[in-house]
Length: 123
Image (tube, rainbow, N blue to C red; front, top):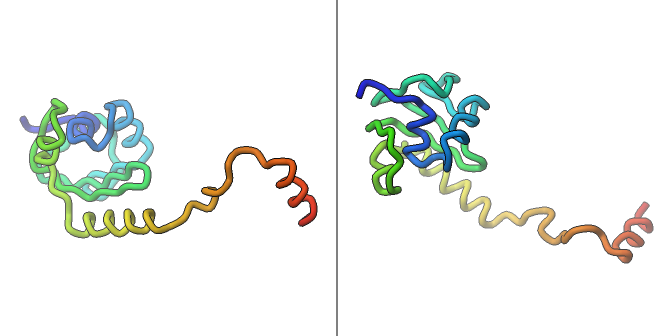
């Protein structure tokens, strides 16, 4: 196999749940190949470097194998090698999210009558 579509490989490597989500991410600029923007239909080859952003998670990986079929996660991990900097950054971001309190965590739906009155007093 000389090359495979980028969106198909991202789906097979389990970075995205569906192929259409992978296509939208590539079109939206969330995936970069060898440091530059690319299109979903471009072929990737072994040795290509991909920068992938999926919601809050970011990966920097090197393609080490190609596959058109989506298999188990253990097989999907064999398709790429993640850089050490990427692993460290992902773990640091995960710890940051774990210990950061969401600003709206204590808000539950619409304000009550009491909340509205307190807001009116502040104004």
